Image (tube, rainbow, N blue to C red):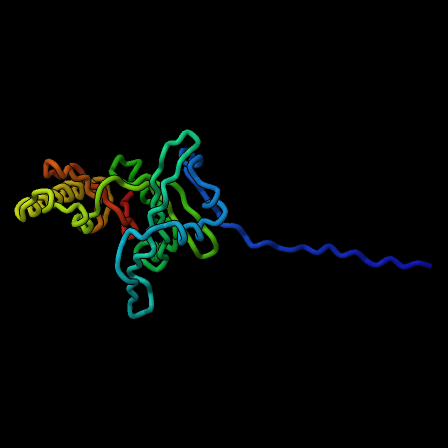
Length: 221
């Protein structure tokens, strides 16, 4: 008389992988290092765009985090075409993101604005993993107003009057853009610090302006 030991199937559940969604035109640019560990790539390869320290409010919520927006190394497709990427770790406790409980609020706003034909960074894709979310956009050519010192304008012959004139041009361009956005139902705050400016340094002109930071933006349908 023989006895057979019952067989048990042991299932080892692997950790869920991050969900990576990329707009079709950009999928060929995504490097394997990013696909394998997108949040690790963000921390190890990204360089902070903003300087300063993390600011926390009285309720313990993060209000300003200079480590949340990073520029990645240049990505290339097989043909050698380059793509410059900005990664942003979503703050779920801030602006319309917190109100809507939608971590993709800012990303969806950018896609809608692009459809409206208004200036915005090209949305590239996003990553979701449990309670974390990372959105990717194409880097906007130009300079943030707070970084204009890096242009060394005075060393290029600018006077204080020239710099003030440049600021007035930037302000006017931003106000014109604000009016255009408002007409199309896009509601947001307008501050020079949240804009990227296309500057013609040689001719001392502001050629264009593109807004950033859409987490507090609403669109009236």
